[in-house]
Every structure is written in C-alpha cells, then in structure tokens.
Figure 1 (cartoon, helix red, strand yellow):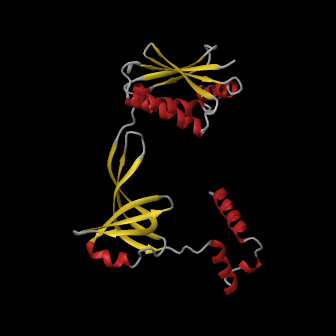
Figure 2: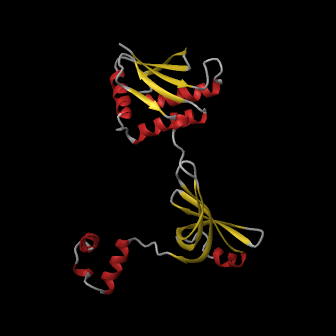
Figure 3: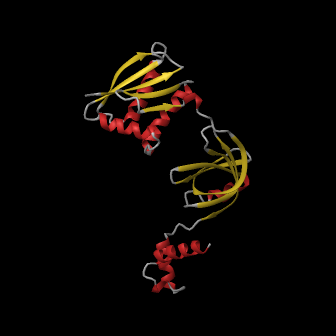
Length: 248
C-alpha cells in the first residue's frame, strides 16, 4: 500500500496565493527531503494553510518512513540534514512554520521552526592578524591599492596591498603557494558563518611545496640525521608527534 507524506505550510501562503514558481521550489525541496525520488510522486495540494501531499510507492514507503524518522529524532545524515535545512530556510523566508506528517501514524512527524528559528547574532567588523596560504591568479588595480586574487584549493580570496608592492607581487604570479601575513577584517553573518571581507597584506613569502616524502629522501641522500636507517620515516614522525602530545 502506498504511503502519503504531507507538508503543512502554516501562516503564509494559501493554495490560491502561492506563486507557481515558489510551489515548484517547495515540491523540489520536499522531494529531496523524502528521498527515493524515483518512487515518490506528487499527490495533491489541499486547503488548511497549504498542505503539499506526496505519495511513496509501496516498495519505497518503508525507506522513506525510516528516513523521516531519523530526521525526526535528530539522527539525520549530512544529506538528510541539508534537505531539512532547505525547507526550514524557505519557510523562514516566507515568514511561515511547517510540519511534515506521515499517514497512518501519529508518532512520526517533523517540525520546521521556520520564522521561529532563532537568528544568530551578526558580529563585525572584527580585525585580526592572520595568515592565508594560496597561489596568486589575479593582480589588478588602478589606484593606490592593488587587489590580488588568491586560490587555495577550491577557496578563493581577494587580498589588498599598497600599489608600491605590485611589482613584487607580480614576480609570484602563478609561481606556486605563497604565505601572506596581514590583517583581516571579518564579519559573522546571519547564518553564523564568519566571512572575510578584507585582508591587507603586510608580508609574503614563497612556500616550499615539495612533498614530505621527497624532502626525507633528500635528507637521506645528504646523510643528515638517522633517516637512512629508518624504514618508514612518515610513520616515525607520526609516532613522535603522538608521544609529544601524550607528554603534554
């Protein structure tokens, strides 16, 4: 037998006032929340605030119920928690609250705080000395300040320096990892995340990106220390670090 899951959107849109585009966003978010997307189908929209009903096929229903139950008791996976947060954020944006019901049971349900969710306090600006490592991929500027684009893996930053350092910075363009020291200006946004708004460079230096294994091989070849007699230097370093931590 198919199982029905109903998302109640309270104190906001009614079925006749909800924009079609917003309805589509809610249905997409509900599909991600329930999972088993190939076996969960739109069923109906009912009156009573706005009730979005979805139906899970017989073979998929136990999996969807188990998923909803995990979320309801705070044992959601990262992907499930992300799907929950998406609906909760949408409800907060619409000044609404919500609850998801599972047909045939009064025990399993999921509440969405929406507009009632406490908003983290916003802080900033906070200035603090710091360090950023990355490779220069952009240098530009038309006034007394140059702006430097720096990438570290998937993250990128926009740093600043006096125009007088432009020539020095240009020498490091696409030359590998650089360590930048300076003062950063940070803000904490309404989601509780700290964002770097500005970073002014005081000094910089190229980093050695030689893999540790190659560096140890160099030490072995020049005969520094006891590395030639160590079978697994990386494991030896890890063991020494653990012993040092235990002493402290």
